[in-house]
Image (cartoon, rainbow, N blue to C red; front, top):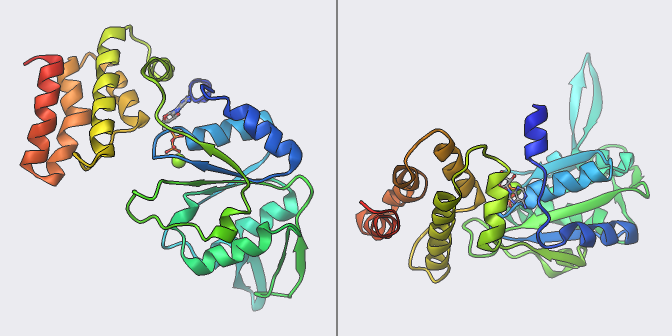
Length: 268
Ligand SMILES: Nc1ncnc2c1ncn2[C@@H]1O[C@H](COP(=O)(O)OP(=O)(O)O)[C@@H](O)[C@H]1O
Ligand SMILES: [Mg+2]
């Protein structure tokens, strides 16, 4: 466990901590924009750790309801009580609130968030007593969104976007940085194979960006590739397993395209 915690330390290759620090000091909420697997969650977790802040996370989906944020009425031994949701809890505690993939939430859920995130930093608990909950001064919110090309994502309403005036854009890192990141998670020495794998990942990302392929591999995949190398899987096999085979779900032509690229890079 301790080892994992050490390994998960964020490599701050684009000075995101500095931006987060300034935003935190100024009390300005932050939006992190970037495709999956570019380190958004790791960045926020590490930042909270640095600030010694308690981190509450909500991962948004179409199934996220207002009650997840605000709370639900419960009946225990004949008495009705109100179980407060994470938004209310974090406002009361003044903790750090992480709203992950906020643009996959339904409009009514976002509306309630909007109420809390406005400059007054308060929300009316109309679901229970009607109490006005005022956020503690230390309350801080960071949200992430995936680029609009991702399935299931919607555009954030402009007024909600304006609640997060500090924006950090995270992309896939340059190849030499990605190598350094991957090496944090593995123990073996396979620099040249790793470089090949990362080059492959970037080729696939570029193809996906111009819609020649349906899928772009993330850092999770390059890390997995490195871990298989650690287990003595030959580089070409590891590349097929991690990067190639997934494309069969879009049919044989898609798969053949990628499998040809892998063969040209790793040999037969
Ligand atoms: N800059 C980085 N430093 C350390 N690890 C990173 C970095 N960027 C990505 N990772 C690792 O890549 C994987 C995916 O990152 P994650 O934070 O889950 O991405 P996201 O939240 O954007 O989907 C995780 O294992 C994460 O630890
Ligand atoms: Mg994430």
